[in-house]
Length: 301
Image 1 (cartoon, rainbow, N blue to C red):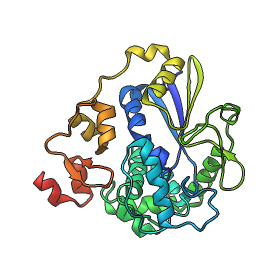
Image 2: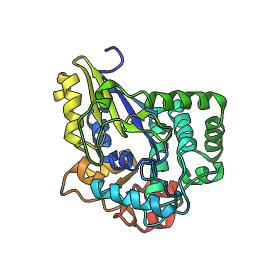
Image 3: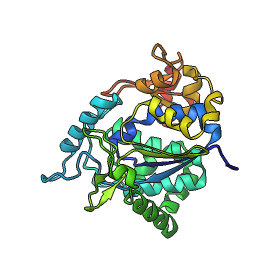
Image 4: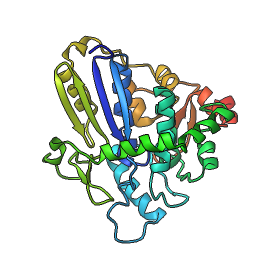
């Protein structure tokens, strides 16, 4: 493969609690093998799973209930309140897609911040002004406004629709997958009435063929699938980061991420800036804290 050893297609969504819960494992995969991967993100544009198929009207309380249930599996933070209903994620998907179009790492950073806005701070951004506030510091003020204008463009809207359609064309393997229970990777009924990939789903293509990792899976399952399609990467794995390295690399870490990336006994570096959440602290790099307007916390860290 001329460009990379393994091509990864990740089907995901900024408003999916299972995708938020899988961040630790996918960050570990990117840390260990990222220099050998071509990683493409396809955004789903869905009604959050906690609301899909409900006969009763959607409320912040019903969504919180679903988020908390999923957090019981993932151990990632979940908000105690949601400031309003999160009816769909397509607007947020277009913003993330515009960022990925500019640079892959910017896309991952924007996608992460959109998730934290929902699952850490319990805020639902509808307007460009609210989204701008949630992405504060990722780019300069003018550049960030340009990104949001780009997200509203017909070109990005067309690309987003292509991604939404691709998510709703699941491969036979996940249609026929025999798995039951929450977090199953079997294709699910979409809010539009058809089938779609469960979220998250990764398709990994390498010299050894294609592997699919769908639904809520362990970090070891992701790595095993990667090495099945590219066995030669067994000796290309980067050593696990120190907590300081991980925080500088990713900007923010939850406790499950700290453990998954750095080991069970890992503790945050002394200058990490803590943000209290109902699901445990979110640790910020000092530079990240200042970008987000938490300078006083950063100075006191």
